Length: 216
Image 1: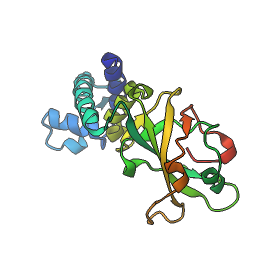
Image 2: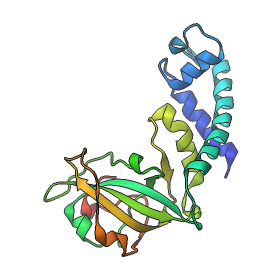
Image 3: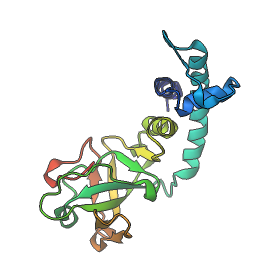
Image 4: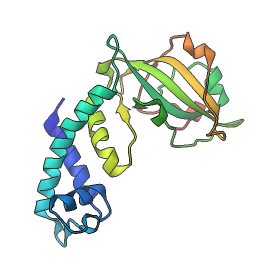
């Protein structure tokens, strides 16, 4: 894992998401002992202040160490296998069809509750289905650099997502699929029995194939 690359990427994300009401600006305000850290603006007419840029650099390094430790504790590895989850909006045909001939995507979560489908695509005929896929991968299938960067910066940029990013050539063994109608987002998920025993292997790929018109 290239920690210098990771720290530099995180440093860039922190510095460029520095509005007055941002988390990094608040932390900087606390760092300099401002009377009101929520109103600190780290920008000058020529860009970010040198003091803030230095603070962001050191904060990035600290966050890398914190998140690597947190990920090691949160991501459960058992017999060289890691269990991950992915949320999708799909068509009814997806539940009934053959999954093995199309990529399923690289964005997963180590927390079932955070495996949320964010984009509703046209499902074709019928009501769209909200699914959560349970997948098993090897540690080598995970893009650890990207995963650490996401773990550190999501709180500062997008909000907590608990995302794990897979490599494009990763192979995922499907261990289960839970589903519910997309319009019933308060209903519990129900398991699809056939996916619990079939042992389908799917490529991660860079996108989800379009014929099923599923959300990514």
